[in-house]
Image (tube, rainbow, N blue to C red; front, side, top):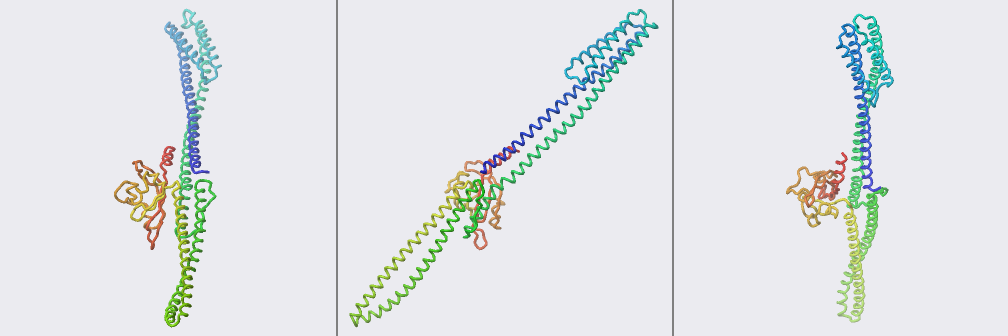
Length: 459
């Protein structure tokens, strides 16, 4: 699976957690709001029933005062109170959401109608004060009013029970709402922590292994191969690197063999040279002998011809050796160009920096990342290019690589050529060590501006 796919899946998972959590919170909030609405309606109806209970008590009180004092004002008060009670009962009956048994309203209307009939009979008596008939009617009115209050008490008790139940349900829904919020934040934090652990593992670790392998190649060690089991871009890079490593190993072996051959040829040439020297000595003596005998001179000339042929043969062999050396140099140049093409084709910026903070070499990815050409970067100080300052940064992390030879990884903010700020993930690794002193380092730079922005947006 490609690294981009892994990142998108992780972001999709965190987004799903946020959506699920929000839906859960909204549902709990809506349920809690509905319960609060029912609770308020229950309280309103409870207050109406208590007011109705007081009004019935006022109704009986008005009739008692009418019998005792015979005052027509009490009769008028009774009629007004009765009309108010009828309106309240009608309003309760029209309520859409009833928090009590509707049959209670029917029974209460029956008791009030009976009180109205008894009051009508009472009002027909001309002189109610001290009248036995009026007192009998009043006792019936009291009993009827007591029944009405009993009915109201039952309805009030039912409303109070519903109110307590709604309070419990409301408290429970608030607990559920806070639990949903806490659980959503827990899942979100867990996802963020997992992504912070996972992303560096799939990106930084393969680069570190690649840099260590490059260091071993620089030291002449071609034995250790990289892992080719990965299915992402690093797996392809590792396979290409291993192919290059095997090719370099084979070419190194061929060069060693050729060097041995050249060494043998040189030894043979040295032996031939010694023979030539001996021949020259012999020629000197032969020249003296030539003055004495022409026949000996002719034989000496023949020997010289043979020696010249041997020299020509040696010269041809030297020419062949020179051609072999030039061919091997060409193969080394091709291997160097092949390794350079791999470094330039990676999507990670790479640069080599000396102890004086001057940039010695860069790949194309780094040039494209910061908008500079190779000629602008090579030979310039890194702090002038990346931070646009005239002096080296105080506490520069790569000083740890120069002073201790450590591999250092850190996040930094660099500047693009056009002034735009870039957030980068940097790993510095010692590259050239002479007499225990690090002379230059290699920096691998990854642009994490977009990943950082997406992470902040998710948070």
